[in-house]
Image (cartoon, rainbow, N blue to C red; front, side, top):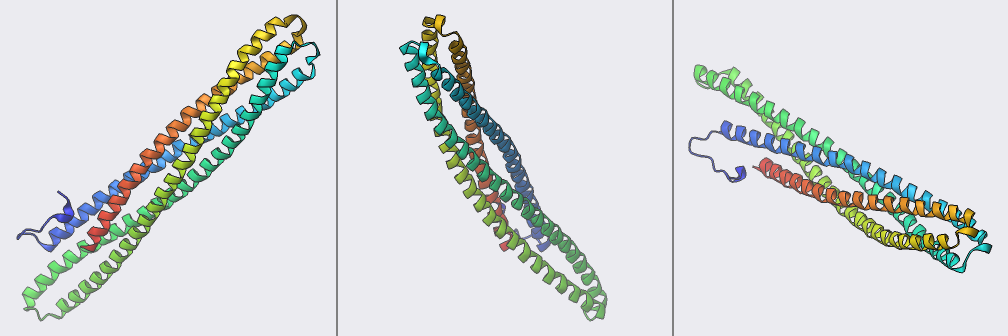
Length: 308
């Protein structure tokens, strides 16, 4: 049963209601702490994945440059080549040019992903600080509630002894009013922080949605690169066959072309690895969106609780 819908019984006292509210607030604050820690922990893992993706892109770009150099050497000394080898190398050069452009776009997209997730980390840290403020305010209100209860008890004893006319009782009553004013001010503070935190959580959710779009775009780009790499893989076998046919006159160029096929294999491996990392990153974004929704729901419950 939702605590906010709970109706006090005839035997309930104000102190019991305060204790119930305090207990429920503690539960919500603890749940928020767990969810925020989950968000921060997943962000750390995402940053590592993005750094690895960026490194793979750098390796791929390097391999593409090496292939370009090897192709230039081979094509520059193609006087003794058979026409079929020249045609095959021309096809590779064309596909390498296409893949270079796609990889450069993918590197730019990776930088955009890093930028979005750095913003998410900043917003997450702001939320953590706001959560700590809420916890501090809650502790102060709990202490005030305890002090108020003790003063109420003392006032009742004094009133009984002096038939309600004691000057000391007036002092206690004044002190209770001061504590009541402080409690009201603390409550306003905690509501303000909760409102700020709710707004920040909405900002975080928007960042996640933005990150999801960028990651999806990068995934599609990687699929396109994978298709180009597969075409290069097919061309590699054609080159190998033609090299065997022209081996007697192409000893030097054969070595260069074999290097090209090796670099092509490295590029394909990096692309496959990045595909896997991006899929994991996309799944992590979905999980964090769920954590954000949980925190927003818990903040709403705290706002309703403080409004009681």
